[in-house]
Length: 285
Image (tube, rainbow, N blue to C red; front, side, top):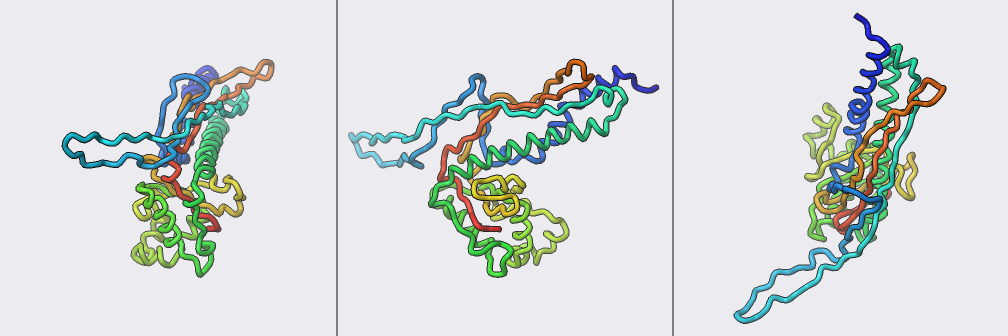
């Protein structure tokens, strides 16, 4: 028994959210480098950015004495939870005729577009909040024979560790990732590169989760053809992801055109709350 046009519309409705979320989830980096904070209402969110790391110290109290008091210093800031989305149009004829290859491609592209934008917003927030003292220049571009990527990474990690945080994640562009994967020191450290060559994937480095995304090419002072920055952070403490509205979709009929707009949208914002828990390497490409 074949499907009717009505059946196809029901299948289309079921497929929309499932396909978009499936395309979105493997590509986003913010769940690995931020803490999620649910926002119940409002278009803005106030947050505290620490002005002083670890202000409290433990003291020994002598008999009859009082513990010294100290104050947590912070800056009160605000982020705007903008609504961001995309609204591609699909012909009803394609749905009625069961042209699910076209529908599948459209829905996947929605997921990819949302993932790209969320990555850009997250990484730009990190990039603009790394303290100047935690920005390191690569010894040489990582494609250069004199480059030492592992040393560069270790130096940036030390910036975070010197502030009593633990680097747990690193985000690189695929081009920088490829140079790292081909580095002789790295190859020697991974059983002369056998596993890297055979499996083609580096998941951790120096105990950090290694993430890669082309959106590292959208940072300030960077072009997609020269994605020269690497971001490191203590993902447990550095930044927050404020979610006012998780990704959802609405289907809107377009009058007279026999078409449907798939409106996919979300409301969110990012903030770095402990700047010294972040670091950056420049000039890697």
